[in-house]
Length: 116
Length: 112
Image (cartoon, rainbow over all chains, first blue to last red):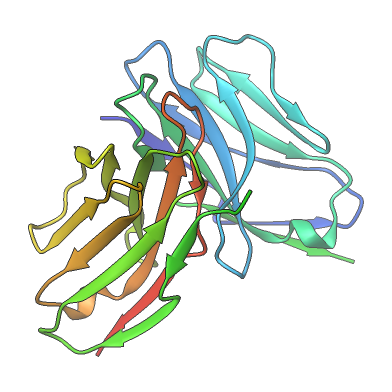
């Protein structure tokens, strides 16, 4: 079974600064998907970024980018130019490939605080 | 395109009762998954339905069940509610063969 570990329960960053959230995972599969989801106080889970394991290039979405290290099974999220609206819980998630394996395995989350 | 909708948004029940939660996926999405979120256990996968068939199931007791209709709408039922069933229940939909799941706003269930 796959496991996802987020070792930082809470992080704080000043507005306009950069912060990196860590995530490690354990799997015996060679192909899979990794995601970062954001959950603001409204509790709606919002997809931030996706990475396919077969792609060597790190995914980027505007101010959000990942550092995907497949051999180390590490998948960190970097938020640049942090904004107050980035304050939320961030969850790292793993999904096996294939149309019949949609189950997401989540980490325990990192609460990100953004200060002025 | 409308997002995933869940009803009701809030629900209060007492122990021993049963409850039904509803989820309407994004138009065209045939896969619907359910997750339970609690402070103690985090986010846990309940089950997934695809084309009216349960395709995957998590490690939850038989009191938790679900179904999916021909229009892809899904319902989740919990019978004989226990205090520990108090949680946020999240529904997510996905295109057939898709990569990511899109979540609804959740149903907050409180069991007294």
